[in-house]
Image 1 (spheres, rainbow, N blue to C red):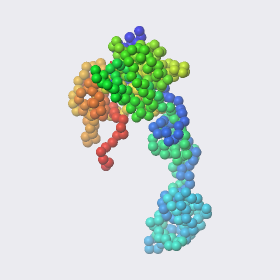
Image 2: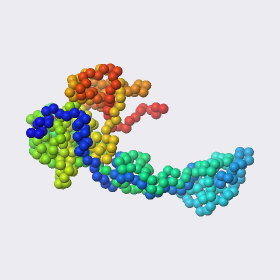
Image 3: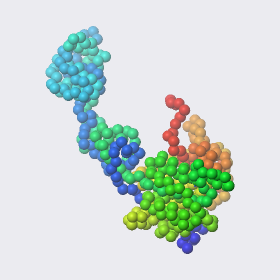
Image 4: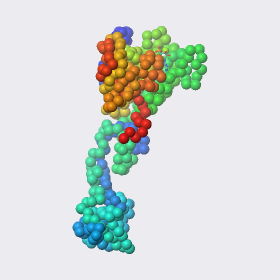
Length: 430
Ligand code: AMP
Ligand code: MG
């Protein structure tokens, strides 16, 4: 009954997004090997148990010296110093450098006690155990001070920071072989419909491939979530129920199709039967009106408040993808511990006029081109919700506000950027 009332008018896009984010949990922490931690989000701040660099060390291949010895050194009157020691990287220095002497030193090697600078090899000439220095150096020159990068006890990363390549490198240099990060959501992916087959299935007789499932599995992988592919259910309540039961111990269920009002749409009654609490059905947007969102209050294991979120996405491939990007992706990122969960939005100049009826927010697939620092947005053409090919060409989704009826060429518009692939240019570009 409640379901029937809510589905009549639908809710707005902002409200849908807020309601989803409000009930989406941040998943608890787990410890992982540093080598497996890329793309994860820290569940704890990291304090340094070391100083970096660990000791004063040489930034150059050359000679460790007392700078005071070289005040008068020049090309014409080089200063001669005996070379009393050789210190390669990785070796410790055994003795204090006395005034009037030099130590051969290599990049990264610890500067011996007593020395206060390093002369570059290029500014010297050497013979036997002596070196002629042709320049003067300032105290501290070519020396990297102990702790100049990180001090013992410094907070180097915060809880909530995501781990990219440089963060992983930093943690490695601190000797952190394990880190506490937020768990990755296990996302159950379901399709339903008697017309659907797997990718290598027989498509004669009006069948189509359940392409949404493949796209959703890929999207989860690219995001760093853990997809669980649960196949295709038939248009029978028992089959749909069996599939949903298999999904109950996940963190998030993403089902495509079967949530409309057709006689063969069994998803909603099955969800109700299994105890899913529907939050809303229908969002005033196009494409993607028939979106259902709810959650199980209790996990399959009986833990209260821990059941999976449920997204019933529309079946049409474009609608499914747009709804995924707007609603599912931010929820998965929040679960993973990200605080920046939404795709970036840019301002662009519309290159054509667009019309629609008021009452729904439209997301128009557009191609973006940067002309002299200004983004220009052109529609990809066919905006049918079945035309997935137009989605592959789209750089972003233009936001055509709910009540607006017309946008004119030249108008400034907002475009949410799409794309999973790393951004790239054909050449260096500078
Ligand atoms: P429905 O919501 O079941 O009425 O489906 C709406 C449209 O989406 C129909 O044309 C379905 O064939 C199509 N569809 C449903 N599920 C999928 C899927 N997993 N992959 C691709 N298309 C689908
Ligand atoms: Mg169907």
